[in-house]
Length: 160
Image (cartoon, rainbow, N blue to C red; front, side, top):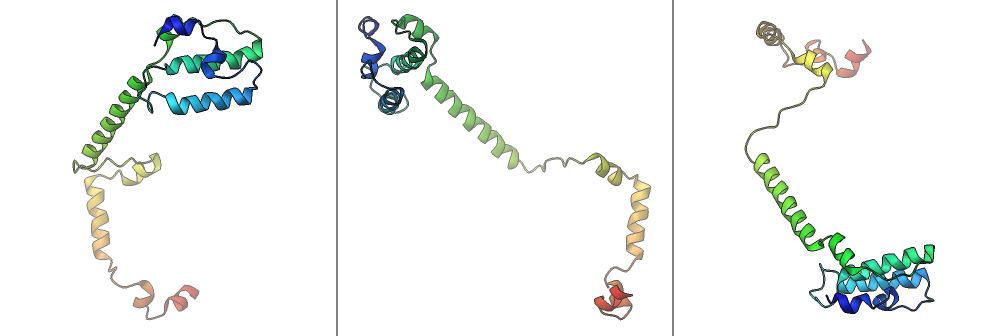
């Protein structure tokens, strides 16, 4: 992470491409370097991944704007994101949410059933109405089907 040496390097030198390379070649080289030097993959501390990213951004923007100025690496290091910290924090958050869900689901409590407005009115009974409904259910003999009590088959009963 020598900033003094990197200040003298051009984005072309950092990515290892020449000044007349195409956008496709620059992108291919950038992706190759990402695979080798990404902080989640490589433990090599001699090459700063942020430098590669900034060089790529400069080259892709410079091809559009014709601007190939130097890079202020101090500014880049102040504003860049530490990917290892974000990755570690996202793992902790994911594991925490998973643990909470497992505890909630294994707590033995059934989640409250959400009813739609038309279902609420159908199930909002007083105790007296509920007893009346239960008595009606008890009085009706529901052990036999109506076509069986009439002594017919289902097809005959349906045609009737």
